[in-house]
Length: 235
Image 1: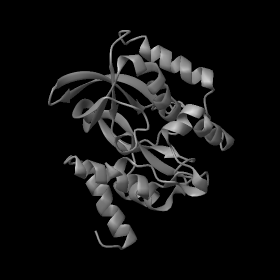
Image 2: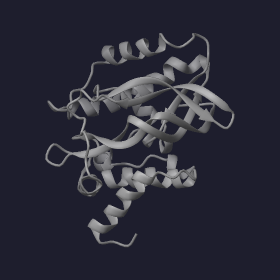
Image 3: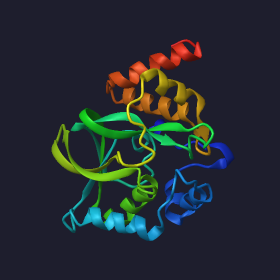
C-alpha cells in the first residue's frame, strides 16, 4: 500500500524499521530533546515494554492496534492486519508536539486515544517468536517520552474480537492539550512542522488511509473542513 511508505522529512529525518532497530531514531530525537519533551533512556523504554508483556501469555502472537501513523507507516513486521473497532476510546489530536512535526516556537499536534467514544483503526498481528523484538521497535517510537500509556484493549474485527496493546494519552503529561476547538486544532495543524515534516502531511496521510479503509471519522472531517476554510484552498 503506497500510504505505508515513509517519506523523508526535513534534514532527511524519517521513521523506518532500520532506524528504530539501530537506535539512530532515538539518537536523533535525544539530540533535540527539550524540557517539555524529555526522552526516556533505553533502559526505561525496555522496562516499560517488559511491564506490558508481563500481562501477555508467553509464546503467543500479539496484536497491536494502530489509529494514526502506525496505520500508514507501521515500521515493524507483522503477519496480518485487520480493520477493527475499539470502544471506550476515541482518536483525537490532543498531544502537543515540539519535535518531529512541530517546534518549540510552533508546537504541532498529534493523535492519541482519549477517553470515551469509539475508534476504528487497524490491528496488526505479530508472530509469537518476534513479539519482543518487533514490539521494542514500536516502544522506541511511541513510548519514548511518557506522553502515551500502553493499554490492553479489545478490538472487534470481522474475524472476531482480539486483545491488543495500544497507546492512549497520558493526561498527566505536560504535552496533553486538553480540549481544543476544531478551529484551533486546524490552525495548529496548518502551521506546525519539524524534522519529520509537517503536521498537515501527518493529518492528510491519516485521512487518506482512513478513506482507503472506508472508515468515517466525523471529528477529522470537521477539522478538515476548518483547514480548508482557514487556508482558503479548495476542499
